Amino acid sequence: MNKDIETVLNTSNKEKQHKFSRNARAILSGLSLAFVSSLCVGLIMYTAHSTEEMRENNKNSGLKAKISMLLPDDAKGDNIRLTCYSISKSKNVGHNQKIYVASKDLEIKGYVLTYSTSLGYSDPLIMIGGFTPDKKVYKTDIYFSQETPGLGDKVDRDHGDFLDQLSGHSLSDANWDVKKNGGDFDFITGSTVTSRATVIATSKALKELESIDIYSLKKCKVK
Image 1 (cartoon, one colour):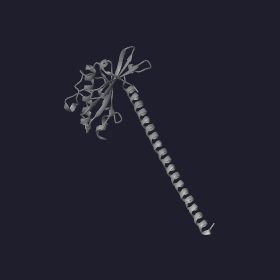
Image 2: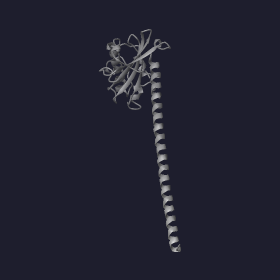
Image 3: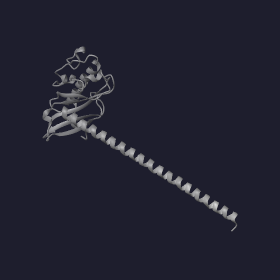
Image 4: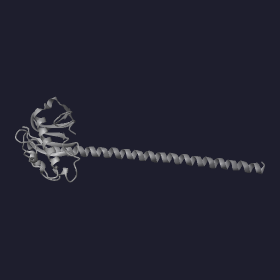
């Protein structure tokens, strides 16, 4: 074979092999990159799902602990049955609220109710309260708040015992407003609006308890 032709053929074969090798490396790099990207996306989705699940579990655990804290002593124990009902719409407590009824041997031992008000600085201010079978306040707390830090948030239990003054009262045995407005309840200086909002919201929660037909409500899950 002519050496010039042989040289051309060898060069052509080498170029083809080099081109094939370069293409193979490119394909391999692309597949590797796709695999790593898919793996990263999968890990991100798994982490997000796990984190969301953890947050939901923590939220439910926190709610259960709060319900237990707010129930009267007679409504606690191994033989207590807790049933959840949804309040879809109410002029007293707002939309999509929950009422938890603690019972034993078909006898109601206490209630826990979530209730919303728009009377605070920021809307909504959502409270959660425990009530005795005879519709008196046992204990209340803030469930969700966007009130101004250092001012409106002074009413919650992390900052003091302001809400304790509501305990023991029924709808009819108190003037449900702050003393500044002629009512029976104290208020926090610099946080009058939020103080008043919690008092009036709790009175409306008592009105709801007085008027509501619990067994006409749709049941919900106690998570």
